[in-house]
Length: 590
Image (cartoon, rainbow, N blue to C red; front, side, top):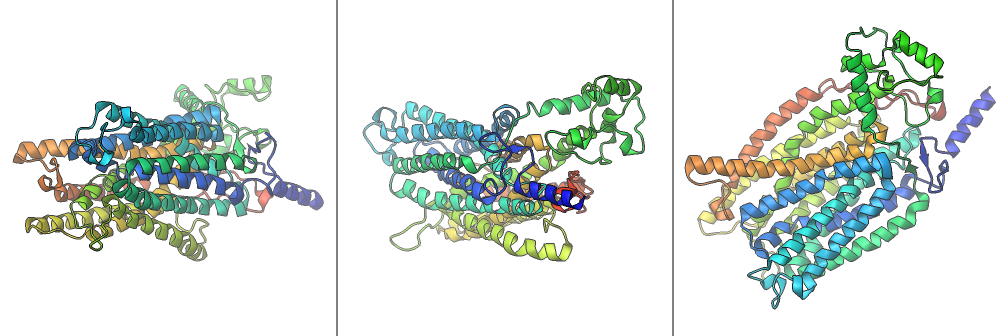
């Protein structure tokens, strides 16, 4: 008996039995697939994509105001609309990947769409018929042509569509390279999200320094050409790594089983739920082909009715050899998957204020910098958008310290495998966001005071707000990524990352909406709106104080809705890896 168990253990160590396959469609060999050897290819293309995206997004408001000559209000709204669309469309890409195409195929296809958008953006700077001005350089163009504006926005939104398939799938595809049921790989997976964001921040740093400098002092066309070539090389690199990847086979629409649970629960609404959860229906583990079984939890008890076995259900199961009508009877696992999705709603809603706050860094923070003293010396000036590089550095330091120092220390002192629970990590980041907006309001008041005396405040006064906000991102952003990957059904992990991205997208739209409402109300009540055509006619300090109040109220709501949160409760194969229980078990106390 012991010999048999030993052989089974050796077999599970050699092969990966987590429903993934290798590039030939077979069970993956643990030694030659997945983990860091595969993740490095994935992290490389993420580095390239973030370099591209932030090389465009960070300085976009400058292009819209200085080249296309939009006023500050219109330009800020256009940046927010584009950012919002870019981070909401992944909901479609994530769904299609989970249901039909698979993550690898979606990443590859959407990368080519992204590359087409970048190529069009580059051509709009070099082809005479679609350049901003026919006979002058982009930087000296005073009356840009409408055809250029049309092509420019078409290219931007092609990049958005490419991002829609790329972003939700790439990160979840990277996390798929680690086996949740293998204790060593599971620990590495917890570090994966930290190092993913380390690479992401390195891409951002180069985007907001080198690329922005080239845009401001060399040429927008040269900058876009560099970005296009970089992405093309990274796509080839990603394709080369295909033999090392572990792939998840799509199982059809992940939403259908959730709807079936709801329908079954409504049908059985008049039945009494048994006090003993073991009386609820669950498929035997031996017949579980894809995915993992989930333990019963006590929240949202109404949905448990979907798993109640009636007499006719027993007859149907006997007659059809354990086949059942999913619209009338659901397993405990399916019920728990619906609970997981419903549990994410309060977390998603109370993270939107964070999305609004983050959107300021690519709009008003940049315009603040443009009005300040940018000179390091007589011969060199910092591009306004490059000030955000301090934020990227802060996030790199924050993520590194968290992974290498804080997590090991907390593991030893608390015994928690994660070190700090996911929701506590997000909550700490929300506090950073509140403090960042408070500092931003104080700095803007200082800037206005110096400007009133005909002086210029040094741009380095903006460094604290960037550093605090981005150091907090090391907690909030990484925590949200981990939460929306881990705490959704296994079949919906691309869609889960898309839900995380939608926080940033909806946050951008809410920021635009807030700008419009605040400007309208303040203009009506005081005769002059807070958001004017330029910084001299705006009262951003008051707008920032409003965001401080919103973040404060939101933080209180977050603590309330996440108190007593129950994490995903996975039935792990305890024999396979010599571990017991689930690291995802437990109730959150904040």
